[in-house]
Image 1: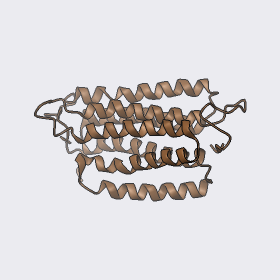
Image 2 (image 1 turned 90 degrees about the vertical axis):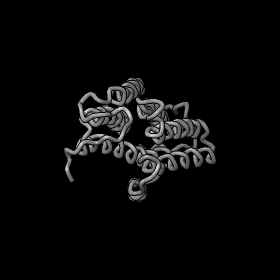
Image 3 (image 1 turned 180 degrees about the horizontal axis):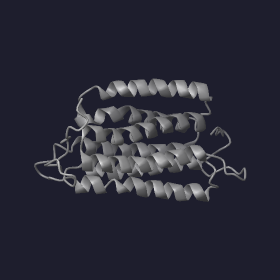
Length: 230
């Protein structure tokens, strides 16, 4: 594979020039803003939730990597885009199993690996303008919300449900990017970036609020049934 081969997958890009996708590139700063907001919340909540901090760093790297991809626009630069996204998805999935459902590290890791394998299979299917690879994450998020709701943890369920709804909307705009090219040359991919940054913020906030405070008091999003695993 030629890692230097140009990628011309988006409406906005009409050449291989570095700045051929300014809207797609600059919209990635939404991820950096979301990560910065999450970091401020992390500091306010004691600054010792290191699993959440790791995901905050990954969220920022999503924006940086995607900016690199939408400027360099090569197959090699694409790795800078997809790898941080994959790390966030599987990292959050593992954290959710541990923190929201109280699973042990071994079982949670095994389930996460199985989820990753299934998600990888989805990426091999050429459909929905490449968005089909994100459907397993949307399904998992929706299932988590439903399980938490049935378990009586309504605040956390609401938080994940809102993230799932926003994720679905962002996926819609990612999917229709090529279809809207004739009517809107900028395309819809930039809305995928902006809305997906909102998804990451909602998920990070939910994860941090679900953890007990350093002083031992329960967070507002918790109840007596909620596990305290990191």
